[in-house]
Figure: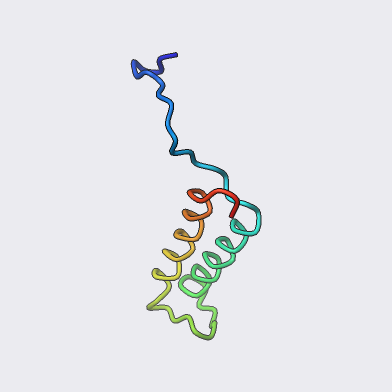
Length: 71
């Protein structure tokens, strides 16, 4: 079936939804980064200057959870 003129191809590169623990870990890391940056919450080992790095880490955890099966 063609969608917008593109033929559907079979591929071995499949994305899977992340498991609940991976999603929750990513969510907690992202929430901590946002709280430090916007709410001024003080969390040890996490400064306001490093909040973007921690947010990127949360995204990387979620990305790995999507790309790797059974994780």
